[in-house]
Image 1: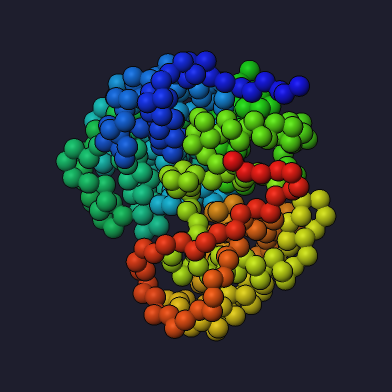
Image 2: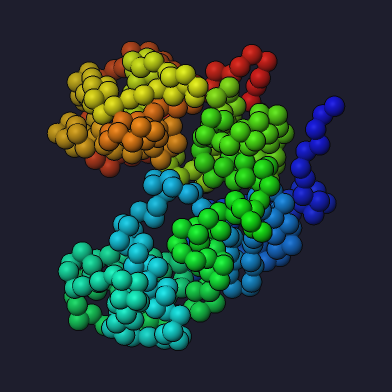
Length: 418
């Protein structure tokens, strides 16, 4: 007997056009969990508000996410990527994240408008209460400026007169800042009143236990929606067994409600967005780093033996240095001058890209510069279409060009993709 697939009743009653609009709104909220009128895709707020009942039902049923929708903003309370260090805001360092948290604490008592100098005093006072010291060193100023700029981008702060940018280099910089207290109150995901420390707050925000715990299927779908590659070996046993039994139905669900394509093989499932809207790092690409990374995959897979259990390939920095060096030497006219002059930086960027794509993870032994390459890397193996001709040297900012043909997963017998 075929298992009953999960559905969203309100969604199923919509016509084709409205259903497509709901999927578009759901995808937008996944990418921009805090959406306001001035943010990218903010023009969809009207549509999101119109379909708010169905969207709230969709996220609550499928992912266990809470969705708050007002006319001015929408806030999707996601569980977050956990310990994945590749999913951070690019402009924020760990110190920058600390400054964001301290700024949020300071803003709760500042009212709707505050001078930049007064806000800095409040941030330092909040840091003192937390046992931290924020000085006037250039690193502290740059970190604080990046934190404030991030809150401006989120719409929580508005630069009414002046800007926060000069703070990075000028301790006397001044500006009048307006605080959107409504958005400020929506930022923190976890229930502050129930947390006795930062670690507990993260646990509660993830929704993995207690009154806020989600079901097995919701926990698995969160991984499928948020992570490009999900290995059965990395899931708790109950979740892995559930996914093995329901992978075909989940593939249909992901495509119907979120526009994602799931590709399955014996080790796990990879999800991709054909429109590249939800992909953190679109891959393959036309830059030197992206092309070297793709061309390096077959050599990296062939040059290492997969280990038992999860079938990942153990690799070290020397493996990446060797393969990247061979590619640079074999086709010197195909790469940017920067890559040829600084191959060590190229290796670091290739590793970083493959980690963001989801096929490379740190070695579980904790050894520095040791990684595990997922068998899902087979889906990006390039298919040669003839001997390469004389290539024009790539500039450091290459123009857009068509991506090379891709080879998908080699599927287990009797299984196919959608």
